Structure formats: C-alpha cells, structure tokens
Image (cartoon, rainbow, N blue to C red; front, top):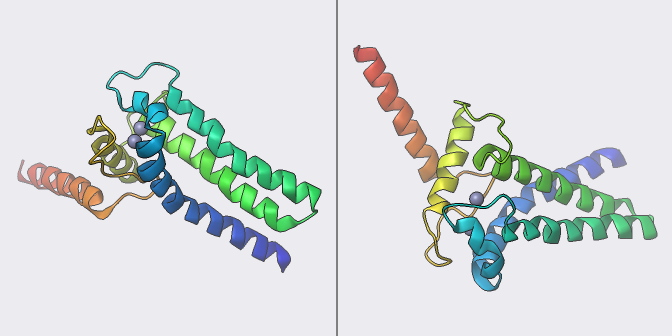
Length: 163
Ligand SMILES: [Zn+2]
Ligand SMILES: [Zn+2]
C-alpha cells in the first residue's frame, strides 16, 4: 500500500513542477537571474550557454532530497527527489532535444503535441528581452497555442479535401 502512496506523491511532485518551473522562468530567469538566461534568448545560441547553469542549479534541490532521504531514512524525501529529477529529465528532453534540437532526434516529427510545444516555445523566444514575455511553461501548452496548431491542421485538411 505504501508503494502506491510513494508513486502517487512522486507523480504529484512531477505535476507540480510545471507551475513551479513556470513561475521560476517568469519571475527568476526573466527577473534577477536574467543575466544567466539572456544568452538563451539571443537569436544564435552558442553550443554551451550560460543558461545551462540552470540545469545544474535546478538539480540541487533534487540532490538534497536524496541526501536527506538517506540521512533520515525517510522515503518521502526520495519521492520528492524522484519527482523533481523526472521533471528535470522530461524538461531536458522537451526543451533541449525536441524544441531546440541540440541532439538531432525527432526533427521531422509531425506529432501534434510536439508541434504545439515547438510553436508555444517559439512564441516565448519571439521576445528577446526579459519583459513582456509569454508562454513560460514547458510541458503544458496553453490553449491559445494549441488552438493555432488545430487551425493550421483544419486549414490543411480543408485544402486537401478540395483538391
Ligand atoms: Zn525565457
Ligand atoms: Zn528555449
């Protein structure tokens, strides 16, 4: 029974990481740590960005959870640590591989969710400065960006039918 609770908490932490990351991106990365995030908003990213420091910074809370879980022999810390770690992996996969294609996988994917993710994040990168941003989330795509992809698909379907 405990196992189910552990898995449930891990999933809950994973889900909660999206709004937490949204707020961190909105208020910290576009706030007082803009100096580290700025080069990610420049049109030509270099191979390694200052922005990559965030991957390291964000791994600290997860590492601390595993440390405390071990020291205090408390499994709840492991759930917390695992939820954060899994989100970090998903984030890297979606943001760095699928969206920015730092590794050339899925580059031609027509999958609707992948196209939604790319469009939403493209709208985020449209803004080169820290202010007036939009679309700060990562795994969850807001409705207006999903709607735009749906409109594109509907248009394509209609023109395909007419031919
Ligand atoms: Zn940003
Ligand atoms: Zn980006």
